[in-house]
Length: 421
Image (cartoon, rainbow, N blue to C red; front, top):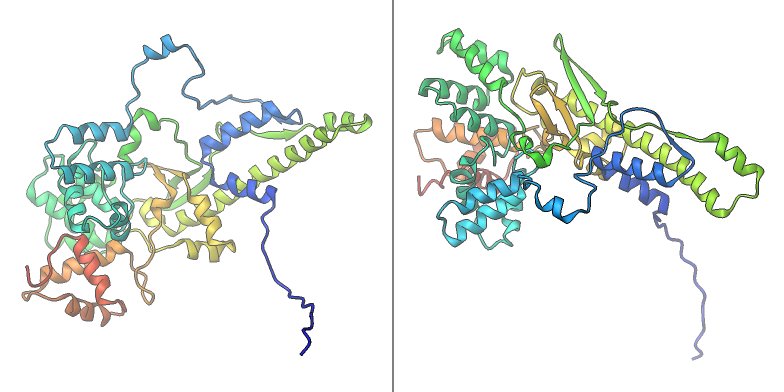
């Protein structure tokens, strides 16, 4: 039997990222400080870029190579080295020391620990159980200065700060009720309900204390003074005015006169590349800022009650939901959220910290809301309910959760299982 050679054709689809698309993606990920530094560098390098007059802001720590001068400068205190110093001052076991140092290095710039239980275990390559990690977090890290460090969400951050104010037990109980009662949708609902048990004056004082807390205690350190917000919100009569922060953001303009002069002469290929690069950069920066504003505006609208100091409860919202509403890819949202900040009346907060995905497919509920529900069920039950029983009670209310999900979040509350309670 003879062997025949047959030529076959197959049609395939393949996405190719062009160099310019790659550069555009990189621009999306840059923080405000990084993009401003890039603009200054490009304006100096490309003759076709004109930087509009205005305050020339530089974010470099220093531009001096004099070793003798640098050696006399005081050491810049960062959040991390301040916390590491506090860890070293304690007589911890080798295991506790490792956990504490790793947690300190995992905090974001604002001082929050935005990692779930799986991510915490992955930090230690699953060598250390999550309950031991949480024990160090709650009993060691969260006692460090500044108050609020190591909080896993804004509610915990506020409670940690207020516990340092030497408040009375009844006042702390009231604050805890306002923060963690899952039946309260906002501060007004909490006030109406709590008037049955507490004097109105005490409730008003508690609410004022909650609203006065710093949402980003880690940003008080010198190393973070160069953090700048891209979005600013101004509360006014129950509404939010949301805008891109134009102050100190350099504006670029293309030099058309120089381009015309280049066209009249025999311009080199290198000059033509500079022209294309200049036009691309201006378009890309404008697109970057426009996208940041769109994403930031949508997030602020979704979390308006929190930002207006009407509630401490964040609504459930994820990257995918934002992407669907803005008609962009989830990866674009992820890049935009990197190192972007929003200026709020309570301080600068990470844009990403205002997001919280739902743990249920049938009901919008954040991890912290679910933990509050679990805690409420356990505390209000006279019986030692198993994880399966708690699951059944919640699923009757439409949560549609698996038992392992309940077990995971119960463990994060450091509540033992029913046999050990």
